[in-house]
Length: 92
Image (cartoon, rainbow, N blue to C red; front, side, top):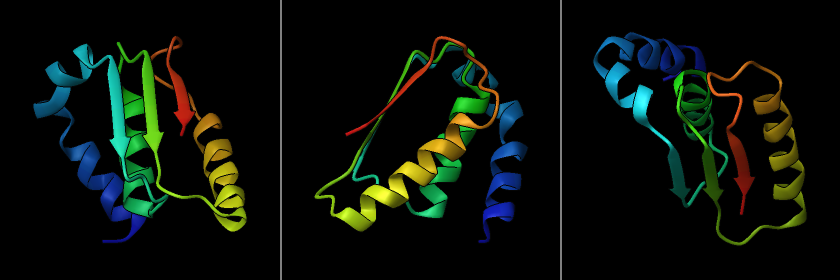
């Protein structure tokens, strides 16, 4: 699936996920590898998680190239409006 198709898929799931998204407070994704599908899911949860307080994106070992990529992804995530103004994102 392309990034756009994946975004459309998650958007199509909003009606069935609405109760979940209204109560979701903490998200921890272990093994976060900065793949497009993982980033798309994280963005979706930030965009629609009205009660979200914290999102932890936990990766394995990180090298210098991964650090630059992670900074790019972080700036992308900060560049759109989130459903919860209290949400905090941590890359670990």
